[in-house]
Image (cartoon, rainbow, N blue to C red; front, side):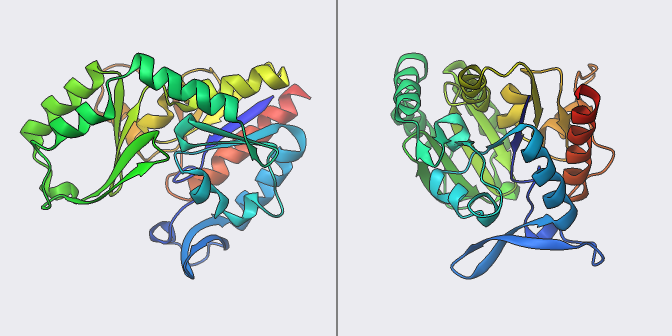
Amino acid sequence: MIFASDLDQTLIYSERFLTDPTLQVRLIEQLDGKPISYMTERALLLLQEIHKHMLFIPVTTRTIEQYRRITVFQNELRPAYAVTSNGGNIIRNGAVDESWNKKIRERIEDECMSITDILARFEDIKDSSWILNEKSAEDLFHYFIIDRQNMPTSEWDGFVQWMEQGNWTVSIQGRKLYFVPRAVNKRDAVLYVKDIEERTEIFASGDSLLDLPLVSCTKNSLIPSHGEIYHLAQISAQDTLFQFTAKNGIRASEEILDWVIEQIKITR
């Protein structure tokens, strides 16, 4: 069995989610001495238990460098695999799987509109009133720091539709806006590891639109009651196939891990 989970706002959380003073948390990431991310102590214990009995794969849109800042995955709990860069890279026993990365770059070239064309058209609606910063993530996708309140709604909707026709996914997570080619996705990377390891079943969790391919590839998924997938389900008139946590915020991480532990007990 595999437990493949998104990290930010699924298993790990920033300081703004620490609203309960009784919660026991551990700092698991710093940048330039500044605290970045936390997990609850109970979530850490549950994840360690899962790691003993299943193949746990952290799956993140973070770059390799950003992933390696998370101390818990470099020290006491060292996953054999990690999917980073939204599926563009796979770390296997500490080393980057270069053949996988090469395959993904070839797929981007063959299947998706070029980033040059994307950014050229984006210039028509982009300005400093709402785009505060922009970066390329390992030449696999682009992301921006934005002011959501100043986004130009009418032009934006048409631009997103045009991008989707060119095989790109657009996702807004907090203050970050992602432009990601569909060839770069978490599902395909996890299925690649599944084949290597000859595992039969995947349990998955994630909160954003970039997690949709992953959580949709298995009937065994649990989604936090916050984030893009949850909000999409709330406004959709159609029944959703997804199961959501009863709790939201950082408490959702414990509920997800409790659920995975229960699956281990059922199948043992």
